[in-house]
Length: 548
Image (cartoon, rainbow, N blue to C red; front, side, top):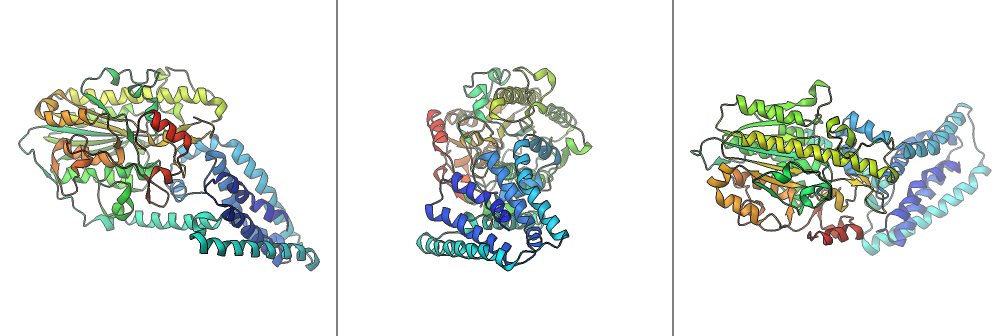
C-alpha cells in the first residue's frame, strides 16, 4: 500500500530536478498531486494487490520515463517518441536496447518486484484493514488537497497546462496525440489525392538533364572534414570539383519521420502541421513536370510519410525488402543501372541512405575501418573514443558513396546536379550533459547542424552560370536545410509551380537567410530559445558564426 505510491512517484521526483523550466509551484504540483492520488487509490480498497495490477500501465509509463531520463537526462516521453516506437524497425530497436542495459536493469529491479508482490497478494486474497488504510488515506487526501490548491493557483496565475507539465497526465495526452497523428498519417493518400503542384518544365528543349537528391541519415556537420573537422573524413569530396558546401545548414527537426518529409516537401517548420498530410512531395513535383522519377532506399519501410512520398515515383526500390543487410554503396549500383537503362530525357532520383545511424560500426564495410573500430559493448561516455572512431568511419564511407554518385552523373556528360543533405545530426556524449543519439524531445546543436552539399557538372555550370554563381555566393550564408532542399532542386531544374519560393532556393539570387526555427513535439515552430537548447549549444553556434 505504501510501496506502490513510492515507486510510482519516482519519475515525478526525477522530473522536478531535470526540468529546469518548471516553476517552484509546478514542482509542488508534479509531486504532491499524483502522490496523493496514488495513496488514495491504494487505500481506497481492501485488496491492494488488485489495485496494483490495475496500475501496471502507469508502471510501464514510469519505467519508460526513467529509461528516457537515463538516455537524454531530461524531458517527458514525447509524442514523437511514441511515433518512433511504431515507425522504427526491429533491428534499430534491438541495437538501441542493447546499449541501454543499465537503464533497463534499473527499471526492472524497481518495478518487477512490485508487480510480483501484487500478483502474490491477489493470489493469496490478501487484504488490508481499515485501520491500516486510514493513515495512507489521510496522507493522500492532504497531499491531493495541497496539489489541487497549487494546481488552481498555477492555472489562474499563468495558464498552467497539465497536459504538458504534469506526469503522467502529459504522457497519456502525448500517447493519445501520437495515436491521432498515426491515424491521420494512414489517411494520407485519401487526404492528398486532390493535391496538384501543376508544375511545368521550363526547359522542354534543353535535352537530357539528370538531378539526384541524396538524403543522408544521422550525419553531423561537425564531423565533416569539409567543415573544418580535424580528421580526414572527406578524402574524396575534398578534391571534387564543382562542389559547393553550405557549412551553416541547420535542420528544423531532429526526428527522421519529420525531417525527411520536410526535406521532400515545400513546407518549413512554420507550416508543417497545417498541410503536410494533405499535400505531396518533390517526386510528384518533378513527375508532373514530365520527369522520369525514381526512389531508391536503403532503409526499411515504415508505413509513414517518407514511404508515401517515395512510392509516388515511377520506379521504387527498397534494398531491404529482401531481408538482408545492405551498405549504402549499393545505392550507387542501382543508380548506375537506372541511368544506363533509362531512355528518358529528364530524370529525377532520390536516394535514401542509412548513413551514420547507430549502430555506427554496422554502417560501413570492413575496409573503411580507417580510424579504428568501436569494440565496446555499451554506449557510454567512457567509450566515446571508440564510438567516435566508428562514427567517423561511417562519415568517411558516406564520403565515398556520395562521391560515387557524383561520378555516375559526371560520366553522363550532360547537365546534371546532385544535392546531398542529412535529415538530422547526433549526440555522442559531447559535453557534460552526456547526451546520446537523436530524436530527443529537446534538441542540441549536434542534432541540428547538418552537412549540405550541392554538386553541379561542368556542363550544367556552363549552361546555367547564374545558378552556379548564386550557389557559390550563398555558400557561407545561414541555411535551413528543411526549408531549402525542395526549392533549390526545383530551381536547379527550372521546374515552375506556384509553390516554388525563390527566397528559399540556394541557386537563386533572391535567396534570403531564414529565421532559425525548430519543429517541436507539438508540431509548433519555435525559436531556438524556446526549443530547449542550452548554453553549451549557443556557445558552439556562436563559435561557428551560425545564426541562432
